[in-house]
Length: 97
Image (tube, rainbow, N blue to C red; front, side, top):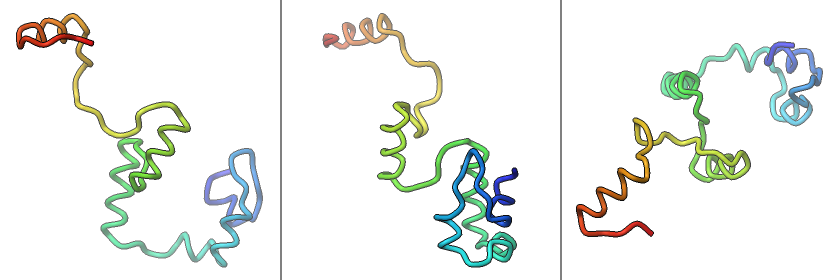
């Protein structure tokens, strides 16, 4: 069943239990048809296209711990290999722990 349809029909499926959200919104059909502010829509579209979660720092930190993976954007490009890092540190007079 499509994501929004489960709430309109008030039916649970294998992905979601509808009761907690039905308690928050009286009329899902109207709620889903209502307009959202442009800045909210822009933010939703941005996160939708990147696949990154939308939420505050604490929320994202909890997700990262629960999933044991990094969800925030990282520095672009491949991760440096240890020999490259070691050589760079030696050049600068440092050591690799």
